[in-house]
Image (cartoon, rainbow, N blue to C red; front, side, top):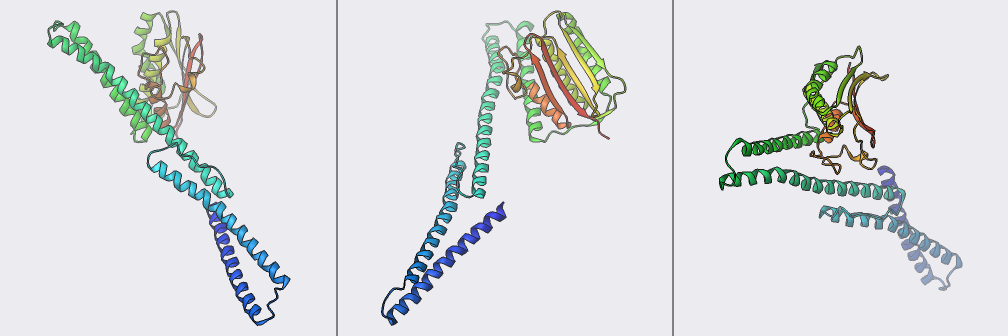
Length: 335
């Protein structure tokens, strides 16, 4: 498209030069003959002059059709350079220029969305950090002022909040590395069935105490996968934690491992909990997105999505209010 644009632009400039030279040559010859002759204007000469002028006007109009959209782009680019990502240009002019304007508008729309997401993320990070820091500061001030006794009962909340801060910082670092593509996976041949069993085992006591049945269903002959076991364990722990959080007493959580027809392993974590509202479901993998009753940071599912993507897999969710949620991710079987 760029080649066609410059070709048309070059032809346009050549036509303008041709008509300008033709007018100059014709007028020079005409006035020379007019001085030597009886100074009568031949009708054919008038037709030629009119034709040349009309041609020049048409070429000038076409050139204006090129120049004005380019001027719009130059002005809008200056606005974007100054930080105004709301700049848009009208899609007018030749096809190539319209395509350029469309691409520019798409670029500025993405920049604007990215800038808004960055601002929202900074606000969310500030909020998430402020809460534990406020608790720590309040408790320490109470201890120093003698309002609280310096015993385990008042020191334990401070330790708990420092753990919350540590976990939040680790999650932010993992998410930043994953989204930038700088996350280094320590891949090794892994028995995914064994990994799932080891991950589920520590949650059984919590599930039993909550009156929730926690089961695993492992398909036979699951191939060994080349993956980062620590990162996949992190994904599984997050999904099981969420399932336990939203499944009430008498409910059921199932962790399944199967191999589909496309020779990729599929892990499914399903529960019979309260489910997710339809308007919230498309956003659950967005960073810092939390439902109204969520007690988490809104980073767990975003991290899970990026970790699965780093392994070349995909993750999806299905849910229905009052009937539970199913989150499924696939991992390719590498040769």
